Length: 184
Image 1 (cartoon, rainbow, N blue to C red):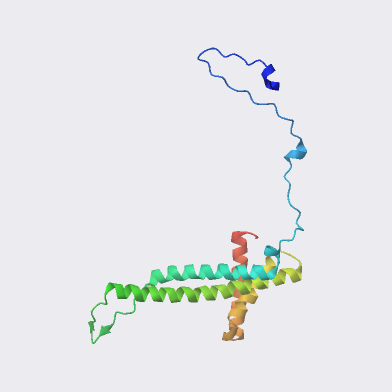
Image 2: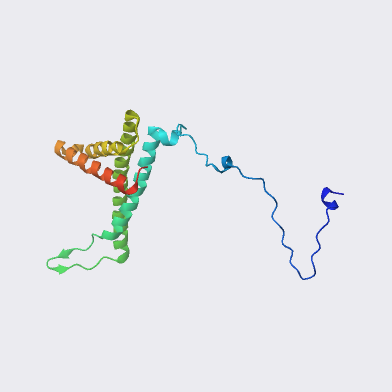
């Protein structure tokens, strides 16, 4: 029948274990061992265009803000129903009422922190993208300028002095984050 039937099978003595030998492989050249990296000029619209980057920053900021609000709400957990009347304590509200009030306050705090962090991260990521496109470079100065812009933008209602403080604070925070986490 087949091409393999003409080959003689090696006989193993009874009780011995047959170990198959590895098949011979083709020699590997140095060219095959090289790591192939994609060229840097490959355009990825989800990571290079400013609108998707800004939308991603807003979404991540909102989710992070909600998480921070939940943690902060659990830490502070002030039920708000305990009052002191005329020098003596009022009776405690039922536990379920206290839990309901605490949960509502935590939810409100979480949504508010989510919105604030979404605005902040949206302004930061959007301005960083625009500045990077405008400068044509990807370096730490982009984070400094976008941190300055985001800090000034979110403190704009408080006047020019607070805008300068917000600019300096967020620029310094951006440099620190870049130094700790490394370039992205």
